[in-house]
Image (tube, rainbow, N blue to C red):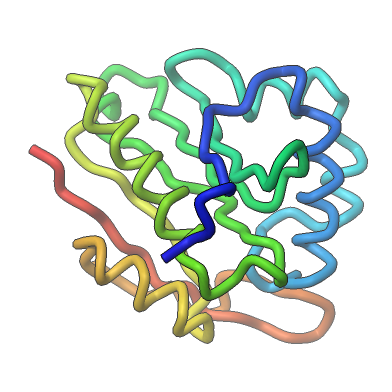
Length: 172
């Protein structure tokens, strides 16, 4: 059970600096869990980051806050093309090391699922997860996500390649 003082809420443009700082730490901590490199993140403008976390109905992110400190995040992006509107993508799930094992990631992912369920257009949520990240895979499967394929050598970090599992949660 997560500590009662961890609050999950939608991120706003005012949270952009905290999001960027934690995202950079996340990439440093778990480079094979993110498709963006540190350099990719640093190349984005503040406005691009704000759009990623609070870009209206198509692009939202939730944060986990310990007091005023952002300790985790998860994003949900709905496909903008009419023929793909029925899909949303769960992206960037991360919880600070000190908060892991307390159910914070589950709460963040559930917030994203609830957001997707509230959108009548969204019928399924997709995600990709590093094939070596067993803890994340177990979490997603426990929430009802089903695997539909594995992409070999999906990501390259330095000289190492990583496979990714693709999963979907059918909502309607």
